Every structure is written in structure tokens, then in C-alpha cells.
Amino acid sequence: MRHSPQHYSKPAKKLNAVAEIQIHDKVFVSFISKEKINARLAELAAQINADYAGKNPIVIGILNGSFIFAADIFRLLTIEAEISFIKLASYKGTSSTGNVVTAIGLEETLKGRHVIIVEDIIDTGKTLHSFLPELHNRQAASVKIATFLSKPEALKYEVKADYCAFEIENKFVVGYGLDYDGLGRNIPELYVLK
Ligand code: XMP
Ligand code: MG
Image (cartoon, rainbow, N blue to C red; front, side, top):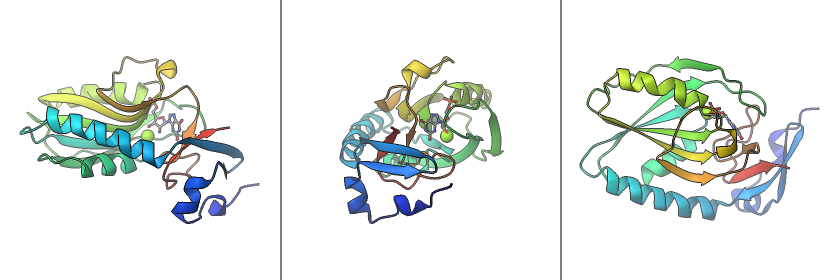
């Protein structure tokens, strides 16, 4: 039986207090609070502001998962900066499919630009590993990676995040833009599979 979003579609205030939620057939428990996320994002943004002052970087969010993180971190940038989005990967179920698909092309000229790729999570690293050569082909002046999460134990491809909000153990997570079969992206904080 598929469970409806009612399980978590409560007012945000109440939601933050919910210790467990059910999405489809699985139960997830509270993992990283909105307060912790906000505090960590402020630290990352301060670093990016310092590193990119005067460089007008282009932030490129990888859809769909990064849209919340990208919006939140971008809002905290006080420097001159641009943002764009690209869709690369389709991901189903609770393990990485390894299928990388370019669905939305990148229109901006990247030649000579300082690029900051924004991901929701680096799992095996396959997604970014397949995309980075394209950025170099487009002659970006520099390429750095900002990710909300990384799972160091799951990493199989050589990818190094320059800015990482949280390193987590190899468990499936939802919320803050990340989904389980389409649901859970609108949960304001991070939950982990029970
Ligand atoms: P790779 O293996 O290419 O995977 O680094 C990156 C993509 O895999 C998805 N992913 C997850 N999605 N909870 C999710 O909702 C997770 O725990 C998880 N682990 C990997 C995600 O789409 C990411 O962009
Ligand atoms: Mg993703």
C-alpha cells in the first residue's frame, strides 16, 4: 500500500518535532535539524564569500535534489554571483542507479568562468565524475564542488568536495531536497532510514 503525503504534510513547526515519518513503505527518523543545517550553511557561505570575492562565480545546481540547498546557500552569498541549473541524473529507490542522463542543457558560456557545482549528495561520486570533464571541455577557469552531504564510505569514483555541509554514514536519507521515490523533498530537515 502506498501511503499518502499526509504522513508529513503538517505545519512546519509541528513537523520539526516529529521524530519519525513514513514515506511510501519506509520509516525515517529525525537526523539533522534545521537549526544545525542553517548554522552549517552560514559557515560554508562565509567560506565561499571569502574565496570568490570579486570573481563573479557561476553556481550550477544539479537538479532535482540540490534545489533547496542551492537556493539556501545562494541566498547567503553576499558577493556578486550567478546561478543556473542542470539536470543530469535520474535516481530511483534506495541505491544509486549509476544512470546519468543530461535532460536540461547548460546555456551559459563557461569559458573563463569560475564554476561552483552544487549537489545534494555525493554517494558513489559517479554523477559528478561523469560531468566534470564536460566543464573542463568548456574551458571553465576553475571548478569547485559544493555538496550538502557526502557518504565517504560509498565513494567509488574520485570526486572531492571543496565545500561539504555534512559527511554522513552510508545510510539512505530524505528531506531538504532529497527524495524517496519522489516524496520527501519538501521536508525542511534531514531524516534517515530507520
Ligand atoms: P552518485 O552515486 O552519482 O549519486 O554520487 C548521487 C545521486 O544519488 C542520489 N542519492 C540519494 N538520494 N537519498 C536520496 O534521496 C540518499 O541517501 C541518496 N544517496 C544518493 C542523489 O540523487 C544524488 O544526486
Ligand atoms: Mg541528485
